[in-house]
Length: 271
Image (cartoon, rainbow, N blue to C red; front, top):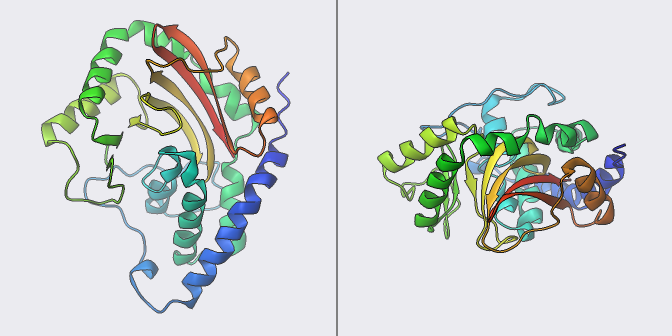
């Protein structure tokens, strides 16, 4: 039985988040009218995403596009060392959008995974999907390995190794190359594209499912790594539960299921 004490972990994670939120909102309130006070809008070419029903109150779809897990402001996916930076930027941009501190904290709390979110990470089975499309996944892997200058390739934004601002004139890809990525993302049901993270050097993550905001959430998908990854499990929900409970102060946890040599399914939670 899955018995994750997510409220405890949410409280631990919220302590640092609220500190950054208070600092960010205070700074924004003290500013005169400038660029940080302007409404956040969708960049040209962005694919607007519907606001999910778990969001506790109505927000503009443009805000959700920026704030969603693996979105353009989720800098912590590049490295866990950017967790505080991500929380600060979320607090600052939320305050600039005229949200109260209570509303911002409510948004962040709603994004923290609950047990049902973890159970759904492998439904339907990632292993079954991979088996039917192994050749296409390998094509996508080869493309990503040849584009080493990019650490993030989504449907509608990219990050370069030294540039994660968006929008940006240099996207790192030709239009045709980006279209080829999008085509494979659609075929393979890869919701949030490709990520490289310093937490797993050399690995390439392919994000199939995600729920949450840049400050907290859960996700699953595939990862190619020539270095062994762990912990490896055949029971991802149970093992992820154990990892979360064993490292509550870490703020994130991953578990893996080996599919073929160098290919894994991954399951992740951050709070």
